[in-house]
Length: 231
Image (cartoon, rainbow, N blue to C red; front, side, top):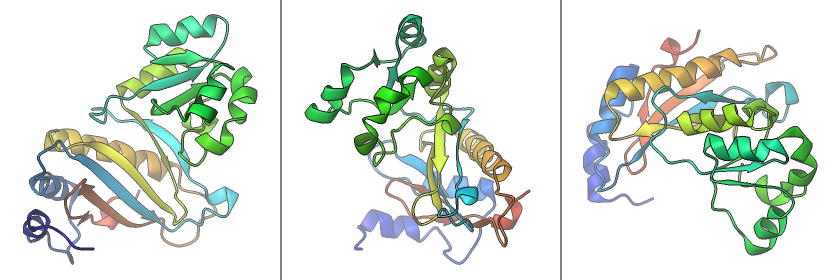
């Protein structure tokens, strides 16, 4: 992959062989985020888990104390008094059966997170093929299948993010924007790592966190000292 001048210049500031402390890594990632837009800062966590085993699949959600810096659009599948509850909580879209053709046939995806009450999962299940591959399927582990739609929407708006293993057993999650202060990014990152440490599978043999890298949208990756991140 060919990198531009800006990237190559930024990459000089990062020692690729080094493993940095969180505060140093955050500082470097902010410094090397030199694009003209407010870059997203992401954490990429390579685990020793094998997601093919059900007992080693990691999936959950955590509310970042300073949010992600991104406006999140929420779609809620609900009926009865839960419709008003979702609207009052600030959900952009609320509906039921009538949304199925809109999503399936019109390719409508103007939302970032989907929440559903348990009694609507029969309806939402019919969208599994389109929502699943996009990582949008509601899930009880992530708190997006719930009767408490008010709390679910409020948490998402406050900066709740979902984490899960991808096919290569890596977790990719945003922890904020380059415009955040170093303290805000470090806080968000620590909250995420604490949550991931808590869900370490008891059946896992060997190292849990193999590598952790922080990066901005256009900048180089900065590796962290993994030994300091595990409980």
